[in-house]
Each structure stands twice: as C-alpha cells, then as structure tokens.
Image 1 (spheres, one colour):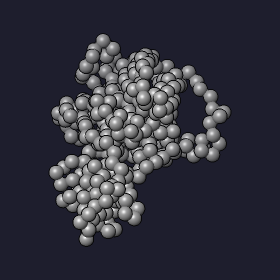
Image 2: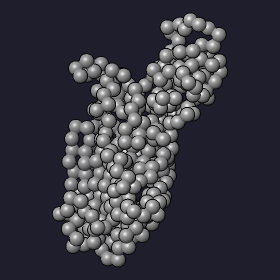
Image 3: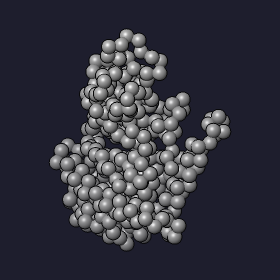
Image 4: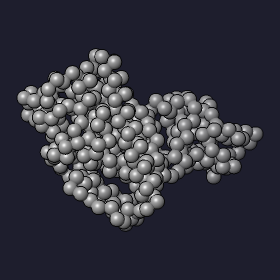
Length: 349
C-alpha cells in the first residue's frame, strides 16, 4: 500500500549535486539531478529512446544527458536535444515529478501533479537554526516497510529492551510512563513523562546527570511519513512539566521521515539536533553517534520482524495497551490510502 498523493523526502538537499542520483520511491525508479542553474529536477529513471536508466548519464548545460545515445532532458522531462537530429518529436519526453527543497530536504510528490501543493509539506524549522540546534543527519536503508518503522516510533515501550545501553534506560520506566495523546485526522501527538527516573546512558554522557531526572518524549506524527520528536530531561525539581522551554538539562530534536522504497523496504531519513551544549561540536558528534547506534538497533529488529511477517503473515498478531497510538496511526493511514485510491474523493477535493 502506497499513498502516492503525499510529499516524501526523496533526498537530503545536499545529496543532489552535479551527478544524477537514482532512488526507488513507492516502487518507481526516480532520478534526481540539479541543473547548472541549481534547480533540482526529478524524472522517471528511464530514457524514452531505448529505456536506459538516466541515472547512468550525466548533467550537462541543457539538463540531464542519457548515457546511451546522448538525449538531453530538462527538469520538466522534456527532451531538448537529440544528437544529429533537429526535429524533436512531441512524444520525446519522460515523466517528471513535483519536487521542492525545504528545510534541507528535497520533497517529492509521487501522485497526481495537480494535487501537489507545497503548503502541505511539513515544517521543520530546527534545520534552519544552526546556532541553537546544531545537527547532523543520515539516511538508512531499511529492509522493512515504512509502516513497520512508523509502528516502531509509535510505541516507545521497546526502548528499554532494544536500546538499554544508549537512549533506553529501565524498561519499567517506559512501560509505566504517563502518556498524553492528542489525535487528529492526519496524525497524532503524544507526550510521555517518566518522572523521577534514572537517566539513560546517552543522557548522562551528554550533561553529566548524577541523580534522578524528570524525562519527556514528545512525538508528533504527520501522515503519511514523518515524525517530529523532542526529547530530554531535567533534574527532579527543576520544573520540567511546568516549563515550555525546559532549558538547563538534556534536550534533543529528531526528525524521522520514512519514504517507501518497496512494499517491504524503505528509506529512513533522520536528523538529530543538539539542544544542550550547542557551542561544542564534540557534543553534537557524540549525540549523533549515540543516536546512530540506537537506530541501527531499530534497523536490525524491524528487518527481522519484516522477514518473519513476510513468511508467516500477521493474521494472528495481537494488540496490547501500548499499541493505542500505533492503532490510531494505522487508521489514519488506511483512511488516507482509501482516499488516494478513490477518484470520487479526488473530484470532491
């Protein structure tokens, strides 16, 4: 199930340079490139002449040149040069995709171009405040579906079991966390509080906690692909629950964005920002290393889960109390998928 009429991260903006970048999204081969004026383009990765992948071509002055016979396409997909031929047939074009650069990301729309409203792209302003939120980002290829990765982020009781040596901490603290959930038509937000708890290793390494902390995890899911996270901790008695800024302890921001590659694989774009020792590059590097290690643990678990579900199916799986946010997320996704397939819904919009 792919929801095509939606914005997905196709690449980090810096990935798209003077060489074509091939990437499979929603099980379609796409090639990204940046023309000599700096404008980014996204085309189906197939030349209209003999079907050669355009990703093996090169960027030239007029656009993207096919590496087989030299046809050149601009960012709209129109063929602008055929070597040895003055007349260019009208049907000499390839499909182009709407693509927008925003907040250090290149967002692509895989569905009906007429519905590609850039105003629907999520806001992530923390990528634009390098002084207060120095950050690093990465891309993991996951041998599991985007839905399974989003499931993983909707139920954080796994942290104490999967991430005990990094961001997790005591499993009981996660199971007993106080959780506030706000649901809406296109996602949800939940905030988890672990009051008077032992800080996990990553937190203690970052700011040197010596006693117990009040810890929060604030997650906002924006269908169909992104989760915005703000997590941290203050020493007990420092007013974590009462403060809006919660400065003076440990704080991080994370963008999670899952772009479907196939039905059983996805691209995991994630970024982590340091909100505690912003003037110390070593702190940002340390945080990135700790988070990267934790997310590799998620990668391994979800890949194993995908293998077993692909083999045996999910008809006999059961839900438990901690699945409440995940269940709402799935309902939202099912509704959006039904709308995506319905011509009547498209006409009504």
